[in-house]
Length: 93
Length: 223
Ligand SMILES: [Zn+2]
Image (cartoon, rainbow over all chains, first blue to last red; front, side, top):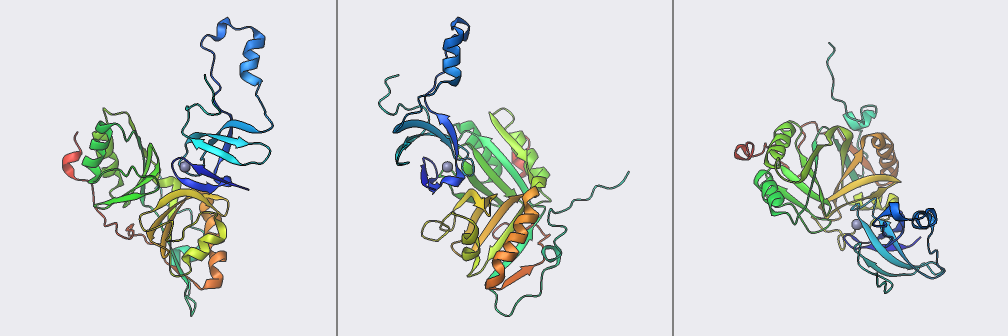
């Protein structure tokens, strides 16, 4: 178990939160123009890194908000927490 | 046609309805407050049309500081999320509050939802109230971090709850969903037993600490 520092509520136990997948995945602007492989890549493929991971959590038993977390998947250490949509991990996109 | 009877989710818990015979040493007092008006208010606090309309009806600003509540005349407005508030009023005047809010917010991007029948409120008070809650929740309700005026949603004994600190470290109000109420009540009775638990009969007058029965101001109704 670990604590997560909700951007709105402050540090709370992990059990108040739900994991909500990898962060910063953008829906393609024009899905009809994609090949099946490109569409499948958007739908299913994730980076699944060993180490720093840019991911979403939701404070489901708290303020209800989604937000972004950078967490190390090896040590579970949370590097940063932020409101959704801001670039993390030095993403240029 | 048969009459539809309003019934607390704790109707089968005899002590919740009638109270118990209090032990010699009382560490915590517990009371159910059924049939309160519980209104969920949704909107954007950055939208001044929304905040002004709410303030007009509620008599005070909706709190924008996370995990705090505000009190107006006969109404408690609790922050639940950046776009969500729980409004507690007495049961009898709930229809008047609902129509006043809906009237004032008719042309605003907002939501007014009556959840009164879906949840109930249990108050815990006394020197051991904090210890009872600490048994079932990872939430730190010590006055240092949860002073009077603090509120939040969290978990208690695996049930979702909303908790409001009425008096730091001493008096708490728990809002629980209808389907979890019977279970959570029994859990609280068990958890509170060792401290000396006095159960007071359900408060059917619908009045909470600091919440005097009152209807919304008439002028706000016809917006
Ligand atoms: Zn939160």
